[in-house]
Length: 125
Image (cartoon, rainbow, N blue to C red; front, side, top):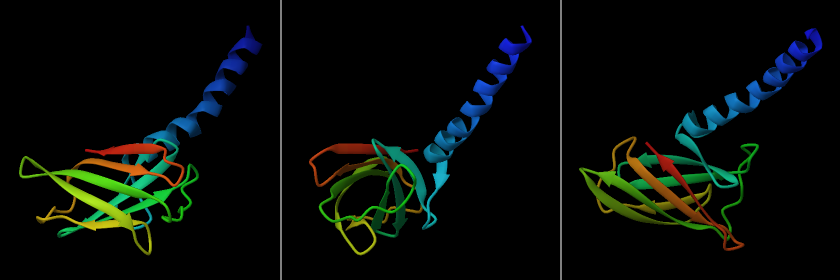
């Protein structure tokens, strides 16, 4: 019995860092002060400033990924209506301009397509 308890405790202890990381990835803050969520094999950070949308793409270890070959779309809710923003590679990630001011933390989805054609999306609440 004591061995079984030790093994169970050890298994739980090993699982905790993974759970903590997942929770952080879902509701975390990125390197640029934006919201960070999981999007398939990536993590994406969303920063909005007035009409500007900036998305930084990270790998699973939260290291920035080159935006070369990526494209995307942000569909953000503003005043109860969707604002669609086309995202193209920029110096630090993907960027685009909305037709209306977005506010600091709009809800919505960011969809990205990688150079290999694989698509992923992250939801921002």
